[in-house]
Length: 598
Image 1 (tube, rainbow, N blue to C red):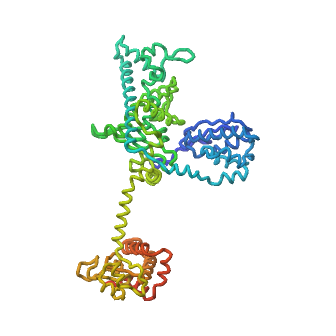
Image 2: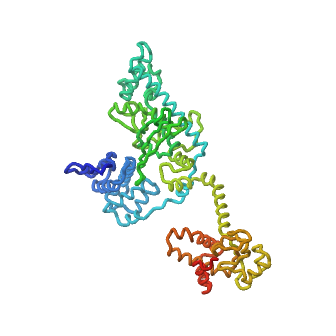
Image 3: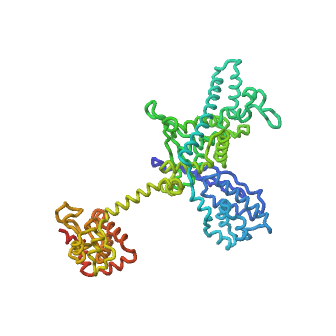
């Protein structure tokens, strides 16, 4: 259904979805869930009998039904080609699925993750030996060393992250200024505002050729170098420098990716497929501009698509960073449209190889990671001091660790995979955690104020020991030992000065609040009653509504539970409750029925 309730248009009669696998069974043409083509993966040139290759290709196609990324398909196809090559080179050669033994698979796959991923494909092959299938079905745990290494994540410090962001911003600004100056010259030439004889007139004409073709005039020789007039016009700057007068270089695109990751903690996969955002100013002139960015995170099945609004409030803001990146790449997108290869992607650059074909986006392969690596190397060569690990994963982890809130993932993932997994964050949080635990202990001690005299067996209570443990007068301690001050849950050392009533007046609150009173003193003879009281409250919990429980009983239940947890073992509590005498149980029920309240 459409948004207004109309039925969606159906495909034409007789429509059939194009097959993923060609009729010969050796070429896969996958399509994403959105209808985008994900490449053509041809296995006709791979070694091995066709009867061996076809089931493997069919299994790859079946396994890849849920893949929406060309990169994922590229990895799977490359791994399968390697598998077929090594199978043909085995001694003896593996020419059918029933010859794939467990031992050969272990030797071939080893602990290489990309090879072991192929196990899911092999399990779909019908003729695979049962012993091999059983081995592949068994879950494989990562080696302990690798698990430990993954747990030992270390974010860049705030100062290091700020240094990386500043260096990337400087690179983007320099590229933007170069392209802006050349674009302005091109517009002057196209408007006819450059006089004859002005050297800029030749430059403007060449820039027009570059803007329309993505290349400059070249000679007819073997290496097709730029012509001498072009070199003279551009001051013999070299091939790459001349071609990138209107387009960002690879390392500038890498700097743009680094800048956006530092601001928004986006994945490289998100940046590779990100379209140029829509832009609009706010209603009033002079107000900050807002860039609306749509993101596509293919690995998130349920909430794959999201959006971000980046506010441009000046230098250093995410919106200003996005504005600079847009200005850096705008002419590249315009030229691609003129060439008949329109791309709305945010990150576009010239690869420096010559020709309009070298102008492209980063949606395919690992070229964006390479661009970041190029930027780091150039920055270090220029004298910048950068951290050793400048890559998409490390920068995203650092940005997530320091931003303090979830970015492009759930709160649980943010805390589990970024905050808790980072050693620096754990170390920095130590003081806060210790303070929180100390406050929790103080709160518990305040909420459970009743004391227990340890070592009193309930038969021969020692008044002196009670006085020493509680600080009460010896006379009061003697009356506690004799049981003359006993309540349904403990003994009261001073009922005229309760924590819950005005000083000098007799205590008139429920005996359940004895657990929150500093005058309450329990001994081991009171533990059976207390254990039975906790058990009775557990039964009461199922007999009242949730609202009644929270309002009348939850706090008492928690307080009594804390007392028992502090002073008794878990396995001893059923025995204590069972040891409560009949008149003790009756007394507890009277208290819960409020028949003992004043």
